[in-house]
Amino acid sequence: MFIAVYLSFMKVACSLETPISKNILKMMRFYLIPIFTLFLGTTVLSGQAKKWTLQECVDYAIENNIGLQRQRLQTETAKTNYQQAKMNTLPSLNMGSEAQVGFGRSIDPVTNLITFEKNLSNYYYVSSEITLFSGFATVNTIAANRFLVLAGIEQEKIARNTLIVDILGQYYQVIYYRGLESSAKLQMELSEAQLFRITKMVETGREALSKQYEIASTASADRLAYTTAHNSAVEAVTILKQILQISPEEEFDIWIPDMNTAIIEYEKYKTDSIFNLAMEVLPTLKSINYELKATKKLLASARGHISPSLTATGSIYTGYYKLLGDDTEGQLSFSEQLKNNNSQAVSLSLNIPLFNNYITGRNIRLAKIRKIDTELRLQEVKNNLYSGIEKACLDYNSGRDEFMAASDNLEFNRKSFDGMEKKFETGLIDVTDYSAAKTALFRAENEVLRTKIQVIIRKLTIELYSTGDYKSLIF
Image (cartoon, rainbow, N blue to C red):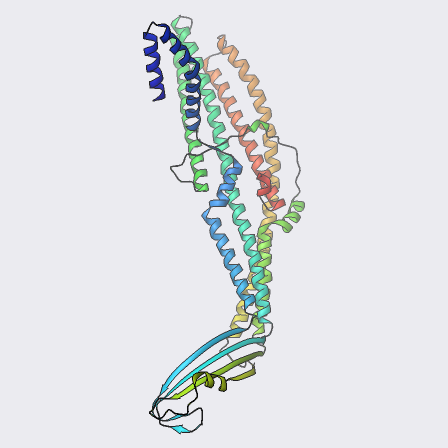
């Protein structure tokens, strides 16, 4: 709309050959052209999709991922159970009341005589109970729930790290396919430039038509390769978007870092050193260790129910009694009876378990099984961890060597292609040799990108084993 108004004013001003119209034209050029330029630039910028960095992707996922939110709820459940276990050590306090209308034979609570009069009884009580000793079952249950809370916190870290690993891998997958797309586009543009040059030479009679067909075939193959690479990059971006759980209608793309600035250093990792660090910091091992401590406390708690238990009880009691017959004279008032009938009691009860249908024995047996299973699971995780670290170190060392070899190969292919391109332009080689050199250069560039990203991911994997947290690697 702004453009249409601007062009209309310009057309009218130019059609008028008056000094006023010329001044108007100068004024519009002075004021409206800068405004138009600013408006056009703002429009272009607003139409561009936001480029997400790796840090922004991770921040968004940690904040909005449903799986992480559910894991946090499980930790909150463990904290609630821990709080309840601690509150079980406090005495209970209850208050109640009971009202009863009696007919026929009953006992008068005031005189303790049998009466046949219709009467009303109303009782009030407050009672409290506390367990003084239960074989340390309550104390061990509290400790077990505390360890389960700590295990839940480590489980949150595991879920977060797993999510970040998926994001990290897919992010670099997008970078790889974007690199393939960029390289394929460059090859396509190079072929099209050569096709344009050959076409002009054919038109002037300096080259044969068959050579134009050959280079046209090569350009067509490069366009297909570019289309394939572009579709692969779009698919990789879509997968990353799904991992982040971003709504389909929202525009999404990532910021592509300059991979040429990523330096691959010569580092030597030892399996035993990394394994010793992982044993101290890895959330998976911490979580299972906390679970193992919890199972030991639960076993002690189950055994505690074999011991006798001692419970103390205290209560306050009062009541009101009234005959509902015709002769109700001489009966005390409600407040006087509550005051006079007030009584207190304190009691101790000792419970010695002799036989309870094998419930206690079953609970002890299940607690032992759970403890043994957790110990086996811990040992299994340690074995798998050592194998994983050993493989990660070997993969990193071999991947670094592959990258070095790929870098040398790319350098040779670049020099070879530069020479082939000059020979092709001067007619010393045919299209077949030129296409073979260009294809070799294309593959060498892709291989350098692939091996570099592969080494970066493998190095991050080793650093995860060493630190136990991907957050420090990204931020």
